[in-house]
Length: 80
Image (cartoon, rainbow, N blue to C red; front, top):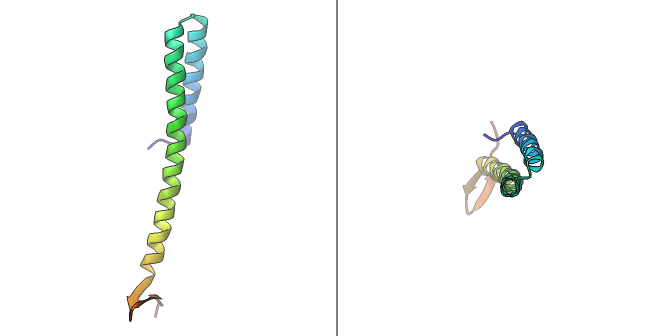
């Protein structure tokens, strides 16, 4: 699983690689590194959005687990 720590390490690695590419005046490499860093940032945002959706679905499942359908209505389960 991609953790925040892994993402931070990847960002640091890209920053170092970009600085090295700038020093070597390797424009094609620099362009590819910028593209890769941009993709990483997009993936990070998508990952966060998906985690939020999962949390919302889990909440819905928790609510469904506490309901019973009876007599054409939903009722909250009561522990006896």
